Length: 352
Image (cartoon, rainbow, N blue to C red):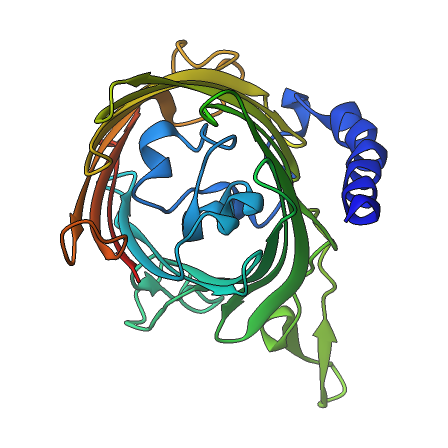
């Protein structure tokens, strides 16, 4: 056990300087691909802008801090749908499944997809897209995760993400690796620390028939010219978070949290929030995430995100039987944006 924990810590220490050396550089914004890896699709954690990396639990942890995957009873199934930047016509769907294997091990799988609707096809002969033909881009992430509790205090997780972007005649494929640690301490296990390193992986490149052009030579024969696209990197991030539970009797909990996110290809972010829980059956949460220029006018030189910082959400847990740990959870989250009318997420969780 000590060897595995030491390996995780050493790996984090080795990768941390490389991450921090590239982080927070606004001049690199827009140079990464597969930025959907940064989108939090879940109903609970989206209500805190994903700043709950120190205490995120269950299947939702697989796109935040995978170490939190260990905090399930036996089996958990999660589904969420988002109206991403309402008014843009973009939807986000996510499905997660987690299964406990023995006392300390949990295996998880999650699928993430984005829908952009039908887009008109533009060609050399129909540059305005008035041919009547349309296409649907496919953007899909598949994650396979493993997490283990080494004690009541130390929890570690790893995840492999497979990334696929495609249209009818071109596609790109890549792989990314996540790792995370959560540490729980305090007299009532009410102090939480978390660190996660996400989206460390291979560069991606588009290829396919869509990058080939058929040309006619003066001598009367035709030939095909294939273009090679430039590689693009993945948007690696480092999250460091802490949280403190204020326990008010047996039925009330107020959690105060803070989080710092170091981004390789955009500005760094930090913020905080609170979550109130009654009987762990009703939860209300909210927070604010800040980055440089977030309050300025919508100009890339001043502001590099559509989000304006505020977030909030609510969850309701309904047990299948009184006193049991199995039940159904329903979540709603809102993240304020400018432009558009915010991002709205609805999630459903089944705990068995």
